[in-house]
Image (cartoon, rainbow, N blue to C red; front, top):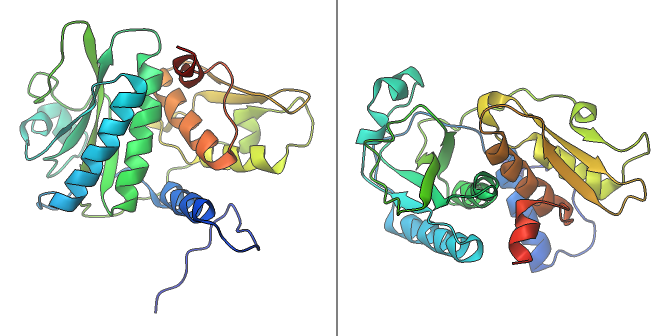
Length: 254
C-alpha cells in the first residue's frame, strides 16, 4: 500500500491552487533528490528527453547560457577519475557551459539545479560532477569565450541515492539573534537539502534586521560559487523571497 508523502515544510489547509500544487511537487523533488552515481543501462525516453530539452532552452534563454544535453555518450565517464568516483553506466549528462565571467559559476548552479529538480519530477536521477569525468572526452560544444563549468550525470537510477548529512541550521544562517519568520525557515530548510561539492555546505544566508532582505554568501571551497547558485535556487523557490545581490538579481537588471 502506498503512503502519501508528507512534506517537512508543511501543507496549507486551504484549497490548493495550481501554484500551490506546483510548489508542493517542487518541495517533494527537493526532499527526494539525492546524488546517484549508478544508473541502469536504459536510454532516456523520448518524452523525458523532450521535457529536459525544453527546460534547458528556457534556462539558456533566461541566463544567456549554453547548457547542453548529451545523450548516449559513455566516454566522458569511462576515465580513471570516473571509476574512482564510483560512477556506473553514465551515458547521459548535462554540460553546463556559458560565457566566461564572474557570475558564470553561480548562474550555472542556479539554473542547473532548476533543471535537476525538473528531471527528478520526471523520474530521472542526477549527480553534480565537478572533477571526476573526462573534460577532453566530453562531447560538448564550447565556443570561443565560453567555459565548461561542470556536468550533471542524468538517467534512470539503479538506486534513489540517500540523504547526506547536513550542518545545523544555526551554522548556515545569521538572523542577528532574532526569531526567524516562517518563510525564511522554510527557505533555509530547502537550502540545507541542496547538493554541494563534497557536501561541504560552505554558504551562509543573512536576514536583515528588519527581516525584509536576504543575502547569501559563499564561505569558500571548491566550486563554492556553483554551490551558491544551487542553494539560492532552493531558497528562492520554496520561500518565495529573492536573494539580494545575487548573480540572478544582476542578471535581471541587465
